[in-house]
Amino acid sequence: MAKSDITGKRKLRGNNVSHSNIKTKRWQHVNIQRRRVWVPELDRFVSLHITTRDIRTMDKIGVTAYARRYGIDLSKF
Image (cartoon, rainbow, N blue to C red; front, side):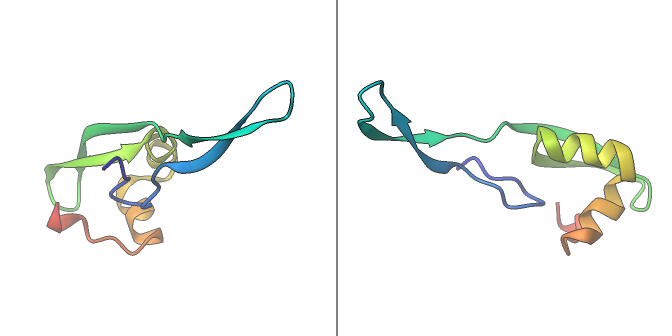
């Protein structure tokens, strides 16, 4: 299943809405990427399934700070 290891984001259920306003169900998928991320505190790479939004935020505030925000222990990955 496509799910972020850190935030837990997964696909959402939405509607296709036609011109005649008929609604049919569809999935809104998240952009999950498998990335090896360097964690300086552990002195090793960690392989994670994360969203592209997670990647952008980790570049900004750091890997360990982002994992700490969601209560994730990176040593288990």
